[in-house]
Length: 305
Image 1: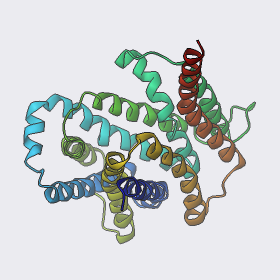
Image 2: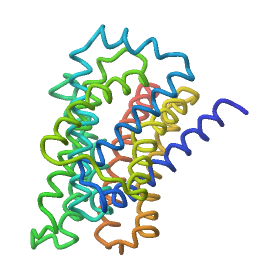
Image 3: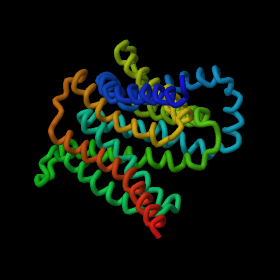
Image 4: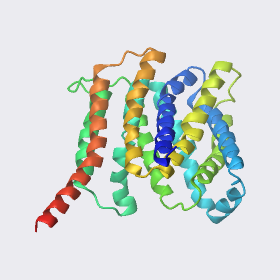
């Protein structure tokens, strides 16, 4: 099989798995607190990533990468998994899955905006246009289409969902400084973040009690939100002839997620969710397409001179 075809298989596999995790979040949160779910999922992910590195014969890199930049991994571990997933799962706990899912997808719009002050990157007109369209979609979802009432089902949930996009964007911005093996780096983040999760859990709550359904959902989240799926996506990007062709598969994920939420959780998908999500996806498309169109126009103009 050609590498490009393999890239699509890995990419589609990753997208299909990521599309199920919003449903798994809600199923697990019916039995666990958000912090307990972070605890179970993080342990699962640490085990899964360790097995992957063992198979790749890369376990020896863990010590070397950590010794090179311990403070770096302290930063990433605090952001992900500790803060990001705690905030995200609390948002899912307070909001319908369809709302939390849609709001969380705006992180890709926020990332280039935060990169301006933090990475000294230039702000493009396409980023501003995309942000305006996307956050109008956020407002439609948050108000459930009642744009003049300013009535939110859970204002705290909306704030937490949007805060999760800040934390996730900061995690990727911090990771731009990482030159190590990405799977090793992810495992190190989880290893460093886990003690903070454990201490916070023991200090404020209690270890989760045994419940087969709950643990199955938590393990699923650890495997297919945090661990294995990340590796599948990395392999897809590595095998792809053009990264952009694989990256566009991401647009499938929220649409498929809504389908799983309706089918398994039996949430009635509101019209405002469809409209808001369509606006967010349109914003993501504009963010990618407008710079390309500008480059093509510039190229055509230079060739005509």
